[in-house]
Image (cartoon, rainbow, N blue to C red; front, side):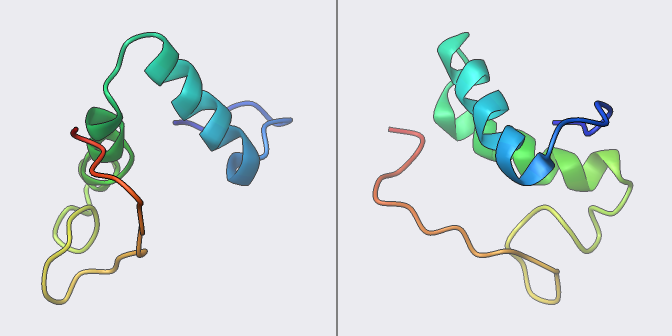
Length: 69
């Protein structure tokens, strides 16, 4: 999920990109890891981003189903 395209609005296009990746065969659970933990690693900020742990910065994700099922 990069924002290299100047006409890509990340807030909207990230969902289209994730759907395209899932259509290409990437399981939903793996997409969750790619968009959370891997981003913390890529930014070299895994000490405070990317996983749900005490004293880390997080956004809350609420789902109806387990994405790994």
